[in-house]
Image 1 (cartoon, rainbow, N blue to C red):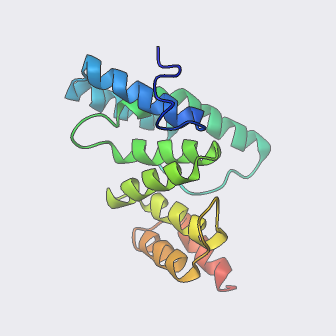
Image 2: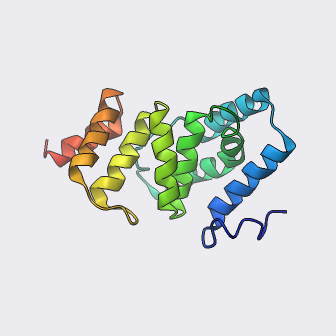
Length: 167
């Protein structure tokens, strides 16, 4: 139904186009708050809780992104409503990052961080530390994001800061 309908928005990014199309359909058809809550619960149940740790093997990498692929429709549905689910925002950001849609990933991570997801600050720090995509390296801003994540007890941010300082 959505093929070609939203090309004017994201001409070269298939997945953001797919996401917008699904959100558009859900808005038109309507989603009850209870459906959005169930979707958020399923997003977490299938995709897991937000974390910024990198998978340590090819197998764990494959399993992680396989779970996220299964969780995707639930996470997308959990974005609908007056208050999108913070975990869903983060998980969609991870999916966008994997697909190379870095500007979109950053937007989702920023929203997730503003909604209390510590791992989102870590992901933003990674973008700034390594200059991922078109992001300019900015170590001071990276450290500021990692410190926000650390204050929220994010283990990946703690490990990253320790490595940055050679501890």
